[in-house]
Amino acid sequence: MSGLAGDIVTAVLVLAGSLMCLAAGVGLLRFPDVLSRLHAATKPQIFGLMAITADVAVNNFTLGTLTLVVAIVVFQALTAPMAAHLVARSAYDTQHLRADLLVTDELAPFRRQNRV
Amino acid sequence: MTSRRARLASLINQLPLFLGLALLWMLLWGNFSWLNLVTGAVFAAVVSVVFYLPAVQLSGRVNPVRLVLYLSWLLFDIIRASIQVAFLALAPHYRASNAVLAIHMRTRSDLVLTWTAVSTSIVPGSIVIDTDRENSTLYLHVLNMKDREATERFRQSVLATERRIVLALGSREDVKALAGARRESKRQAGENG
Image 1 (cartoon, chains in turn orange, yellow):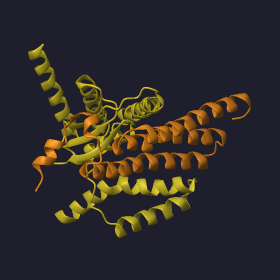
Image 2 (tube, chains in turn blue, brown; image 1 turned 180 degrees about the vertical axis):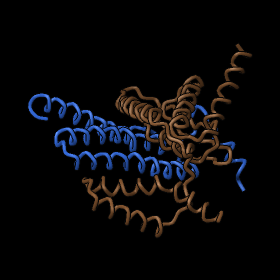
Image 3 (cartoon, one colour; image 1 turned 60 degrees about the horizontal axis):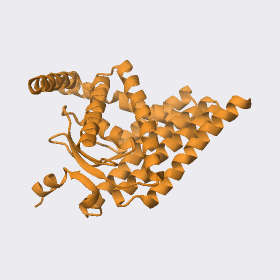
């Protein structure tokens, strides 16, 4: 794709992607505890990555880039939640979360029940 | 004789995963040739022998239309929720209010539980803290849950994700269990209403 249409697609996708990464950074600073910060650190960035890699794929449309982009996005989508989950679980179990910010904690009874 | 048949059945069960590994190899090289397919297959075999893991119990049922529907929903959810979380991070008067929710799945398959956990985790705003395999329950930390109404809405959305996954990839028993659970909840709603 070339010309004006290509430029517009690039502008929209790259701007959307960088806005997401910016928001992730701001969220990392502003959110109050480990678990909320995890949301900011791991999530909007996936959409940002998808937007930017989609732009790369649109501008260099070959089978090679397309497959690489698919592989990148799939791996990010599969690995980011795992990392988030491990950090979340250890943060919860070591009480690095602000209970005063929770409207409900349905895991606490389960943890009490299974404590040895 | 039976053990040979059982081994054959387990090989057939593993075939999609094996092909997936070979496909991944070709994706990473970015070209689809016979040579790449063969080397991919060789590496897939080596990887599955060297890094041996317990066999994944696939359901043996795929509904392609439902699968596409599920993936499109997932993509839509990711985009919508990313914008929400980004907005939340940038909103000037942000006040934190989160929730840790226990969500009981309606089906009891490891595969569906895993898929649901991964799909709810990649959608921004929710992180899996823990899972309880025996009761097929997910424990999630959810961002920006102000009241009970919001948590119930979120619970329904996770159950809807589970439903889409079961319809796309779940076994026949799961689909039946799901239909049963739906009838049950409808009946209860009817009695209450």
